[in-house]
Image (cartoon, one colour):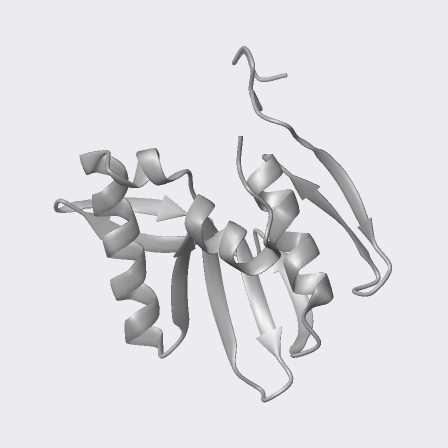
Length: 129
């Protein structure tokens, strides 16, 4: 451990995906649900967790962020998903980081989506709480 207590305070663990032929680490039950949604979607060819680090500028300061998922589709398109609880997206610093990340990916011609409880439950039909 690197000295931080409760490094992963949410439901974290490992999930073995037979469909994608890999094991995913997840830091929250939200991320686990996203993996299962992608497994069930026939249009998804591949899924990568925390695939790369991106350099962004937030309020004039250079930062780095690691998006949660890179989704590759059967039509050749790819997009990035960042998973956050809805209440976190309302925190100004988090919102600024998400906006800067969106601008980065738009500049790269890559889709970028933030999935909260609403997007996840819309796709898997399960409630939160």
